[in-house]
Image (cartoon, rainbow, N blue to C red; front, side, top):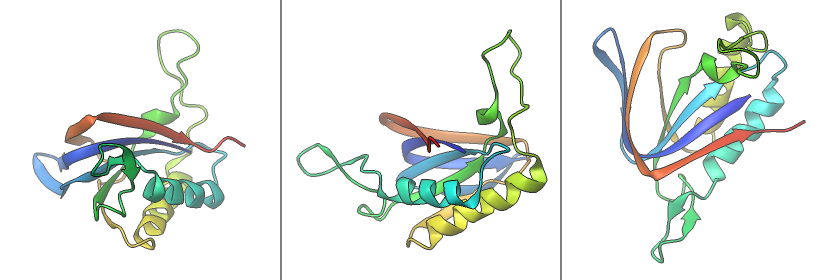
Length: 147
């Protein structure tokens, strides 16, 4: 499971020209799920997402979490994060989870974020989404749990 995490000033998701989600200050979490992923990885990554200190404190140091700043998270499923670009010029998706496995794990990740007291908005699973954001910094991290 891979989470591409971006610190944002604001962020939104549109589907078919209609706004389906938006947040203010917080994080955009692009969520890629691979075939070998389990709820254990999703739980670990949800805790890491909420507690990662990537927001600046009064001294200008990255010392605050999204929870500390009362920020929000926009979680968007991102199939292409599971793409393998090591061979040729066309990504392969053999390691990506099938939708019937990926959707419950994505929903579990979102549930575990919410259980930690965070306001979470989402995109629409498997939809063609347009994501707009103002990346604050820019600050971007790739979260993965190595087995």
